[in-house]
Length: 271
Image (cartoon, rainbow, N blue to C red; front, top):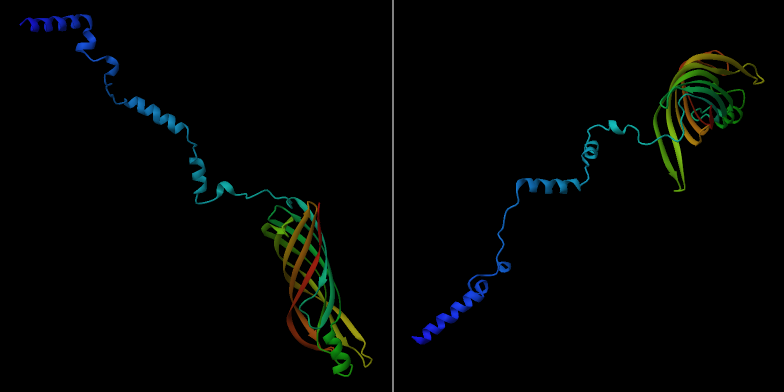
């Protein structure tokens, strides 16, 4: 009984001297309570994250647009023709005439209302002679004094509408960029030609000049090297009706539609 009282006295003394350490757990070891973040706090965090991203909605709309109206110009033209006068000097052979051969010269003056449209006045002069086949027939095969029935194109003057649907650039050996246009030019004018006949036994050639209304279609390629200068290559076509006379007698042999095709090359100067 006495020992039990002593134990009670010791416990009472400790409880008085160290009340927190004995009967309660320290607050620093207590478990913290979990609390869910509020909705307002979540919204502010999401806004902060969204603000760090790049807004590309406008770019996506342009990229997926059904029509490229916002991108009508791929690049600026390095060389322009709009509101300019173009003067061209060309020369080249006739390519589809079995009876005549030689060169043709051409002078044209045009004006471009825009990069796509313009008008042009064209003058063409032929410097043709008998082809090798015609000369061989006259001098060797027929024994002289006999030749084929044919005419000789001598010139053309007319007007054309220029339409330029293509403008592009190409790389030359990976070292130089060349800019070029392709042009189509339907037109109308007057073509002149000569009747070739033998008038006497000495085989003197008589040339009688004639003319006819002609339709034309030219295909032109420009290669630009300077804002005022370009190399020009033309494929020129003329169609007109003509009367062909007999080489021997000079009487009418036939009527036909003539197609004259020339390949001309030269230069164009822009002012």
